Structure formats: C-alpha cells, structure tokens
Amino acid sequence: MKALLLSEYRKLSVVEMPTPEIAPNEVLVRVGACGICGSDVHGYDGSTGRRIPPLVMGHEAAGVIEAVGSSVADFHVGERVTFDSTVYCGECGYCRAGRVNLCDNRQVLGVSCGDYRRHGAFAEFVAVPAHILYRLPDSLPLEHAALIEAVSVAVHGVKRAVPKKDDNVVVVGTGMIGLLIVQVLRHYGCRRLIAVDVDDDRLALAKKFGATDVFNAKQVDATKAILELTAGRGVAAAWEAVGATPTVQTAVNSVSKGGHVTLVGNVSPTIELPLQTVVTRELTLHGTCASSGEYPECIDLMASGAVDVRPLLSAAISIDDAPAWFERLYAHEPGLMKVVVTP
Picture (cartoon, rainbow, N blue to C red):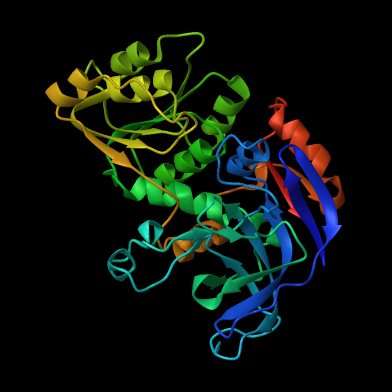
C-alpha cells in the first residue's frame, strides 16, 4: 500500500509498505480522508517527542471497511466509518467508568512515544479495533467526516463545564478547535458568546459561527473589554484553546467569582497561572484531553448542520502532495486552517 512515512524529523516520503494484517477483533479500513492535526505538524519536527520515526502519522480519519477480523460481528465490508483516535482497552477502571480517554493502556493512532509505536492513517489502509469504530451517514462526505475527531475534542471540552442557556461565556483562541467550541456553545444556547483572538479573519469566522461579540487582543485589552461588556462581573465560564501564558491569563481574569475555566490548548508545556485570582475568586479549572465517547453526538451535530466544518477546510490534497503541505503548515502559512489528505 501507499503510505506517508516520517522516516526522520522534517522528512516525509511517500513509500510502499505492506498492507496491515488484522487481528480477530480488528477491521481494515480503506482510508478515504485523513486530517493533518496540529500535533502531527509539531511531531513532524520532533518537538512533541510523540512522533518518533519511522512512523506513519495521522489519527483524524474516515473511510470504508475493506476487511473484518474473524471475531467482528457488528461491522461489515463496505460500510462507511470513522474511528476514535484513542485505542483504549475497555477493561481498566477508567474505561469501565466511561472515561476512555484516560485509559491506563491508552494508545493513539499515528503515535510513537517510546512506550509504543502505532502506525496511523496517512496511508491507503489502517487497522483499528472494531470497538473504536462508528458508522457514518451517507450524507456526510468522508472529507468532512475526517474532522469528527476534532469536533469530539470540542464537544468533550464543553462537557467538562456544561454552560446554562443564559450564561455569558468566552472562547480564547479561535483556531480550529476554538471555532468548533464556538459552534458547540452556540448549540447549547449561551446568551452572550464572546470570542478572543489576534487574527481578524478567524474572529470573522467566529462571528459567522455564532459569537455575539469578538475582540482582537492585539487591538484592545481583552479582559477589560469582557468585564465592561458584562457590567464588571465577568463571564460564567471560559474555554482557552491556545495553551500559552497570555491567553490562559485572559481566560482566568475574565471569569466571574465561582466560575469555570476549561483548558483545552497545550502549545506550551508550562504557563504562568494567576494563582491568587483562581484561589480568591474560587474558580474551578478543568483540564480536557481528547474525547471520551462523544463520537455519536458529534456525527449527529455534523449531519444536522449544527456544526459546520466546511469553512474550516483549507484544502483536500493527495498523499503525494502531503510533504509539501506539511512544510507550509509548519511555516504557519497565513489563512491555512485544516488540510485533509486523500490517499
């Protein structure tokens, strides 16, 4: 099969590899589309330590079942499917509690971190356990379905601190995940939905997706603007989708007493937290990682149009063109949001 191999850092090559053999509990999926995640771009240069070459990356994918293992009864050849990026065991305490993203034996497709190496979906075929598969409606193109994993991150993040309908909320950072969070929050019916970023084009998309107010943090003091907008009280909850000190501080300082801050972004391994603000205002901080069983809800949200990924797709490219596009994404080319690889 054709595959996109990270043979060394900053070197991607289209190569021929053996088609994966499947275990009795696995299916072989012919990949129709696979999104390039920001974590893949950071793994491309080795900065994450979780993409150790040689590796086929890619974990945001959808396709058609090509073959099923001998013990698989619920899925059949020819069905259109997507799958969780997390390969969880289903047996540990976290899995039994429904928190599969925290599985003690967790692996992630397209990741090699020293403890394991699991080739991903930048290839014609990928083998995955049947228990992480989800069927797709015919109305959902595979290029769109490849973004369900990203939508699931947003849905899981919002569910860490579900807002009330009359709440004022803020999303700090309107990249891919931030804009999906905006759409999910709009679906929940928040009264005032504020978005903060430093890019006017992304803020315009936030407006399109349902933000009632937007602030460019390069042009205004975002915290001050949010407090003025909320009569000095602040918002009930904030979602931070960058993971850097300035944006985390904006989120924390914009929340009212007793409010909630959900930290989604993790671009920086450490940040400076305004601890006294958190303590004296009794704020609750939530970490959020990947997703934990939200795929069916995400499929429904996308199929119904409540979440629209079309404006977030910058390009659908062939696997042969992927090395050059990785370089463009690595260089942070302006205007690029999500690129999908079609083997």
